[in-house]
Figure 1: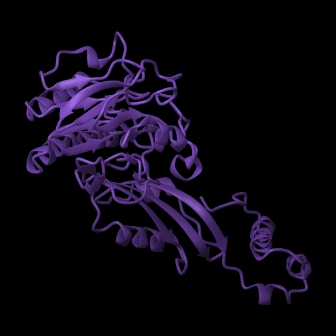
Figure 2: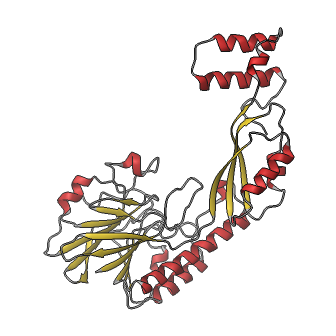
Figure 3: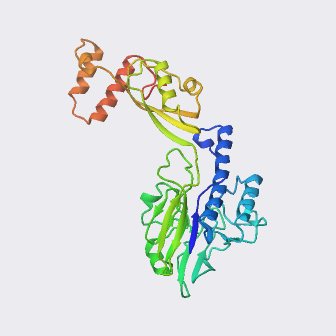
Length: 366
């Protein structure tokens, strides 16, 4: 049996927290809608037996009528191929949920916090559960044991805690569970939502968000095409379904003598890109280099820019400064004579020398 598995699309998400304006946010949400259509196309081209979604398909508080209509249309396009949805903490199931709208007959939404079965055919049972509130969902595996013969596949939105530090980072855990509970459950494999980074483990799969949702997201993205054998083994392949134009770049200021040099280097860095980019300006710069981030961002590019400064260290000639018979020279000699880590020394020298020059931006250029 072949399944296409997705999770964490977060349709209608807000991008304001990333410093992006309304126009850029609308553009990115339009790309998200195209991702949905691409997923439907993947179901058709792979001749999958079902589409399964492990939650956070949309964001309950922000979902729009346009998104509701798109999802109805998209899922109807693959009828009679079934669509199984296990609502997560963002798209939780409740009286006012989008999931209460009328769907095509091929859409099945799990509505209970208890894992419940659906027969997929070929001796395979799908067990799914739902978040019924934005928080407080239980451990779906606690006390659960598959009670019938055949192959058992799970579908829910939850936090695997054994490797939480590696997989979830600082994400708040929802419906937390441990691998040992999964081993006891009788489930051969589980498709999960919540972690946006794809995870491929022996007993479970996090498809991850099929498009990046923050500048810091890394790695390949896509929907999972999973072949399930009669013995319950799963072969997985991630297929791209999105061309989400999110770039996180670093720009080295070494060699830039003035703001025009910075602007030219910035323009060259994004010349062949389309979409949205965050650029961090960093590196060693000449001591008197000054620039204005707002003016740089508004200089006209083929891409929407968000600029920020990272760690910028003035490239002082310390050997020459240390020979000066001045307060500045004495400061450099004193710091160089102290035993300390190189990074700490460089930071103290940078801040101190900038302060002696009367600069107020002691941490970074502005």
